[in-house]
Length: 310
Image (cartoon, rainbow, N blue to C red; front, top):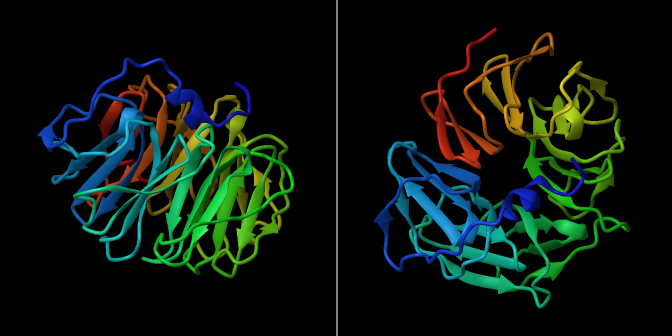
C-alpha cells in the first residue's frame, strides 16, 4: 500500500455512474461511504457520486438527500447546534447547509478541479477549515462568504484528517509523518515530533493531553504529553488504519483496510483483533448513543455491536 490517501484510493474504485434523484427517497446504503456525522438521533453519511444519506433512527433506515453535484464527497462536519454544516469532496468542492442537512447547496469550488478535499472541521457556524491532497487547505471565518487558501507546509503532502481535543486544541495528520497542532483555533500550526515517517490518517484525542495516532502499516502510537513524545503500540499486522474511535470507557476501536479491526485496551494500551465478520475496508467509525458502532466504507453501512469492555 502506498502512502497516497486511502480515501482517494477507495473513491477510484471504478463504480458505474449513477444519477442522484432530486427528491428524498428510501435507499439501501450499500454504496461507498467515506464519512458521517451524528446530530442527536439523526445521522448523515456521504460518499461516492454525490451521495448524501440521512437516517432518522440511528442507521436502521436511510433516505437519499438531494446533492447539487455528482462528485465523490469525502467528509462532513457540523458546527455546534447542528444547523450549519459543510461537506467537502473531489473537484475542489465545498457544500453547505443551514437547515441541519435537509438541503445542501454549492458554496465554493476551486478553479483546479483536480484538487481533492479529504476532511473538514467546523469550529463554529463561521469558522471552518478544509484540508486535502497535496497540501490543500482552505479556511473561512465568515461562514463561507469568503474562503482563503492557507499554506500549512512547505511540502505538498496530503493532509488527511483534522480533529479537535477536549481543550480546543486542533490536530492535523498527514502524509510523510506529518503531525501538526494548533492551540489558537488554527491561526498558527506547530509541527509535532513524528515517531514515524510514513503517512498518518488521524490523531484521536483521548483526554486533555493523551493522544492516539494511527496510520499505515498498522502503526499506532500513544502520547501522554500532547504529542511531544510518543510510545509505539505493538502490532504485528501491517495493515492501514484509517479511523479510530473511543467506543467505551477504556476501550478504543481502530479500523481501516479490509479485515483490519482492533480493540485497544485504553489502560494497558494493548490490542487484539475484533469484529472478524467485517470483510471490507472501513473509512469511518461512528459511535451511536446506545454504545454500538456504525462502520462506513466499501460495504456502505454496517452496524456493529457494542464493544466489550476490558
